[in-house]
Every structure is written in structure tokens, then in C-alpha cells.
Length: 101
Image (cartoon, rainbow, N blue to C red):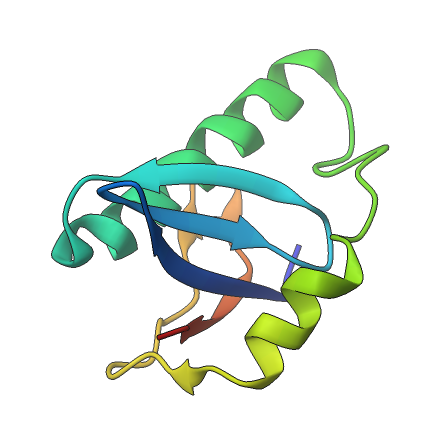
């Protein structure tokens, strides 16, 4: 799998919410600097579980609601670009992350 995954990150109730858009998923980080590691951790777990079950990653996932796409469009690109995430079976997705104010 070598694709782009768009993600918007925003603060809510003391947590940094990491919200996937093309295929909706949500995970949390306590501190902003933990966001990249949490995205990598979440995707690594997803891909490992899908590999164990012989299921295509993100099978059955739907896009996020329009509210989050609008948030993404108005957000600033993440300060440092994410490189493709290396997964056990090879090159993983490229993460396009934006930080909403």
C-alpha cells in the first residue's frame, strides 16, 4: 500500500485529536509532539491486525463527515512533512497532516 492519507489534528478537552479523513479514524495524543508517533503507532497496529486477518487495510471504512474536511481545508500543513510510514510488509501510506487552530 502506497497512498496518501489526509489527517486533521485539533485540540479538544485537553487532548490532541487525530482525525483521518479519506477513511475515517480517530485517535488521541496528550501532547502535540506525540502526534506523529501516535499516528505511526495507530497505523502500525491497523496494518498488523489486517495482515493477521488477511483483510485489506481500511476495508469498510467510510470518509469522514464534511465538518472535518472543512476543518482540514482551513488548517495549516504540519510543520514537518511526514515521510511514508515503513511497515513490516514494505512501504506504507504517506500522511498529509494539517493542524487546525
